[in-house]
Image (cartoon, rainbow, N blue to C red; front, side, top):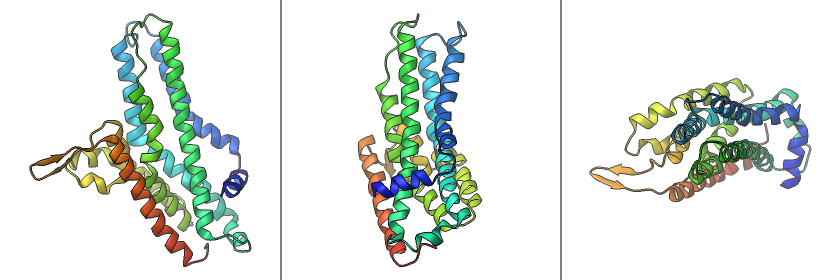
Length: 254
């Protein structure tokens, strides 16, 4: 599987551009931090700095990360569709589900890399602030944990977007579909306060980072920890992956 993932990476057209795309959220975040830090009296206080980072995490978990998932899955699978690479794959001693999960693993690795870069930018901002007038500015481990675990929580969304981009030759539809679902995550989260949001994986990231995971059934409220919900998301991903494997075992690549 590692060789397959490595082969998938070398098949990418313009890998440096793709890495730059994955770096862009961290670069934008760094610019926001630099801009905020150079305006005295606006953001140079502890509470405002924390608010800036919480706002960045909100938009990243609610909209931007899901958007990146949709674009990345469509981009990598679109290469195979445009070059008709699936035809060539039929001549190799490979099973379709091996290729499916090798490419999905590559996509997840790139998304994880993007989140690690966000953590590095935050850590750098903390180091800079520790030598500035913002005394008492503490390192927020909860925020770092949210960035680190978000790619795991959003695995069900990645599987959906990857499957759509894999099975459909027109990769525009998965991108449009992913964008609509990403933009709808906040209204869904607001409307389904009880338990309906469990059926909408695009809402998982927002719920997870803000720790609003409790389920309400009738008059009873069942508290759900972030660790338990992470386990739920991973189990959901594994079950869905098993279903996709069964489907791929019964058909050719394309």
